[in-house]
Image (cartoon, rainbow over all chains, first blue to last red; front, side, top):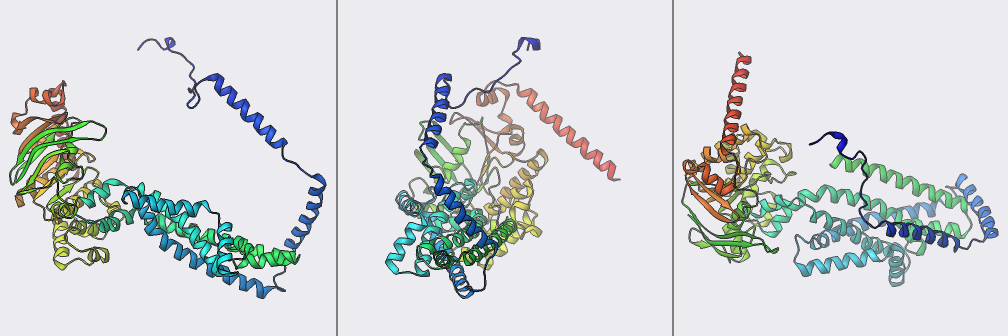
Length: 269
Length: 273
């Protein structure tokens, strides 16, 4: 310890990633140049944009005067289909995800099972819902069955991956303690792993339930049934007032799902 | 009862954590394992129930060599060894009762443990153990609702539920305050005396070890450098175990703490009058 004025009075955080000053500068300039060139390469047809604005306005007018009544039968049928599809596919998807998620956790599964389960997850996550939906519609025809299969498949990639990551992050000492009692593998899963990951699994399932509802509206457009199919028909017929009504209903349901699932998740903690 | 013969462990990184440890613990003896951090205390007790696989050597429990047992046989042998952990290692979201009953997992089939349908004798015994550690009224609380000292008592009850022939105790008091530490150590030694249970206790608090242990083994860099009674633990032996340090100062510090505690107790007693 010496007198305070012998120590420097300024301090700057040293750069953490690119330590060389010249490289840092070159990188920053490079990024800006690329951004400018990239934006410049987007071709905008301004007269077409103007036309589009007019159509957009008609669409919004439809929104402002939603017509629930004239297509109510189609709408309610689509809704029931969508909700059924959502619930069944979430339940089935989660049920299949649990064993796959356990298999994809490095700290529980033998190596070869781990690789198989991670591969299943990777396939499910790589294919977007619409692509799977087109595939299932081609296989099993138009209608909610294709939608149900699509959403179940997509749920597996989502839940199994997050569950597996969660299992890999459990408190190992609790598992060690259970193992030291002479517990079998199944007992280890039931006593040390399940209590630690259950609240999150329930939270994720609820979250997936509302994702699945939103997705059911999208995949309906490619023929997988539900409210999306009704919406698609309405737009095709230029019935923007009915389409507006459908969108409002979708928004309302997603909001209700959002609030109730966040309430439930808080309750579970 | 327990015999370690030439036990060695080298981790994948190449660090020799234990080299050629030979020890035997007779029935009813409480052995304190002391040594600096990284001396291999934790590795040693985890090699005994093979939570860590020893590289070479023998672990004889009675006349079974635990090293090289198949998975199923190892599970059967682990029932004979109760373990108590530093951070209690209770399953936080399970109830106290479930934690104690989990000591029976090695004895019951999966469906019984899954349905929480344990045999009547196990349940009676779990209640009896909870009563012994003074937590009978907490049976239905969740483990994370308990204080540190209470959690460690549940940890002790869980280990005893196994009907063990040996206790492995890993830093039982490291996360507890001095007073609770002494209570827990007292409870442990009482219980071992009641059942004639041998125990190996990792402990880095030297005065606490001297107060409660019958025998002390000093470990340094994976080797046994001291093996004797607490009285034989002199300043020079402590220096061989831990390296240079003013041991006198440390003991005086501990004495001071005890005096301060005693004084605080007296004052509290005076206030209560």
